[in-house]
Image (cartoon, rainbow, N blue to C red; front, side, top):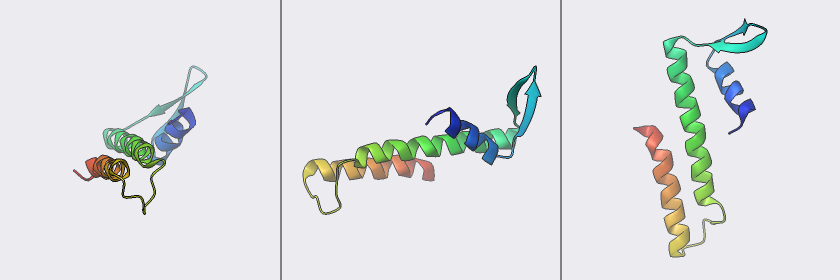
Length: 81
């Protein structure tokens, strides 16, 4: 995740974009901050899951591929708790 992704996610939460001494800054209400944290965590989980799946194919039943897909599912499931 890069800076642009983080700013995009911040804007998705509906936070206020305010000017602070000539710099852009973002102001969050508690609910918006919680939503922002959840969206960032979800994006990071998905990135990690994709790393696990990278190079595996659905028809590949080698132990490594099966384990990689299981890891990806476990990472994605953390967001369901």
